[in-house]
Amino acid sequence: MGNHAALLAKPGAHHKALLKRAHALHQDQVIDSDDLCDMLELAESGLAFAVESLLDIERTNRGDQMHVLVTPMRLRGIALDAKARRRYPHIRGNVMVNAAISQVLGRATNIARVEVGMPLDPDPLPPLLDARLAAMAVTGFVLSGIEYIDGCAYAKAW
Image (cartoon, rainbow, N blue to C red; front, side, top):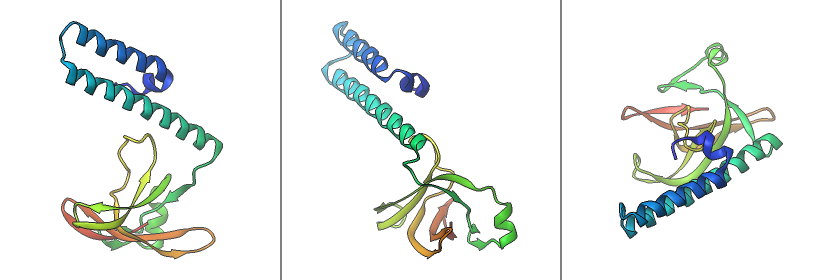
């Protein structure tokens, strides 16, 4: 299941092949019933992932998602001047803000992240903890919060 391209090209066929392989391993007594159940659940999860990914791609192609250009306004807590912000490569993606439990903070908080590709792809920026809307105008907005890099907390704004 490590080949995303094959999975997205033919999710039904990929799913069917995984089911057949799992049942064959069980029938040959290579795996027990618990392992079979785990493998079937993984196959179902792979199919669900493929379908959701294809729907996301379709929505993106239709323009259903709000893509923004993200420019960090601070690096390791130090504010960037306007010239430095213009030189910084913009990150095009979806800004997602969700309430969740932060392991680092040990409490519930708003966590912002930038998604740029597939769901399992790494995020281009560290998550923004305690995310809040600091400013908003017609052409953009600023999210501010805290980022943790190598165990250190820094003020951050996008």
